[in-house]
Image (tube, rainbow, N blue to C red):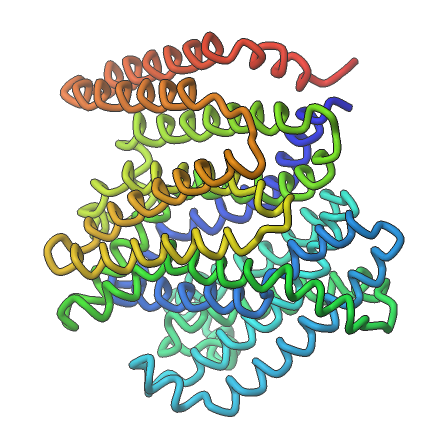
Length: 497
């Protein structure tokens, strides 16, 4: 099969679980932003910032190391899997133990002294999710995207079902249900738990998912090769540093908002920023789906004669897809904005900035394949640290003056800078013939179309949507004209009869 077509198909399959899961989770945002006040939603936003960081720490780059060593030593794939699995199992078990042991001091340090249960729930979620990451990576390495997607979708279904049960059905039954149902509901539901039910549902889903991955974990041999583990850690630890610094770039702004703004409005601002950040979800979903399929794809294709030209072509397609998502959201913002409650609409002005920031994050991720293929992962750590410094400095500088607007612009500056750094260093060590002028021309065209669309907002709704749809078509036709191979690639993606 044509490698581009295979990448696209696997991106679609991996994206199925991510798209469905994130879309469903996104569809919960209207619920959250109407059931919870901005400050309460700020708690959810903050807690998942910590989850993202801890998952990076507890997987410490072993997913990418699994891909790298499985390809480098194909005869030892099972040993690579078992070694990484037992390493993460040990570290995750220790993490959960210490979180439970020190739950009260942790809760007090995070300003939640009366909600120690948040700490236990989040610690358990993180530890079990980190363990699940390795069998998930095994499925990706074995090119089993359907099983990967089915497992993730099951966990997502459990999570969403329990959220709806606790936040909608139980309160409705208490207020409007038959009398005989009240004692039953009161046994499983306590209104005072509030946002805690978001975490309870997540933990239940994580447990179900892990149980479904047990057959994959059972294929591991009872061996942990210490010499191999040492080599994997040497390869992966710079990726851990890069991941931690990447978390700073992606999520630290929400914590800085909490601790740098006045305490009486801090969580409210975090909640608003977290809600509008969700409107950039489609860009994030695409990038995540692409990453799931592209990482093993890049490693597998690296030995091919035309690999570098292929990688450059992938970049072109990736940027075009991101710009279509950008325009699809911004040209129809009058519709998209209703996915969050009216109390959160004041933050809509940062959505285009966040969309562009996420696009440059995806471009950086594409560019950064050079240091993974050449095993020079220290460069990744260096880039991420540089980005983290940019993020910290700009947020500390801008948050007191501009609030979450400063955070959004700091994110864009950070990811654009990272893309530039990776591009210029990569040119000297693993040159890929990226078509930079064409890429910037497409970005400029998309931005121009977006600014033109701001003039159509004065029209009646139907006329405005018709005009914006025409602008979107103009971009699509321009993208095809700028990338002639796109037409043949689209034809290749059509199902064969």
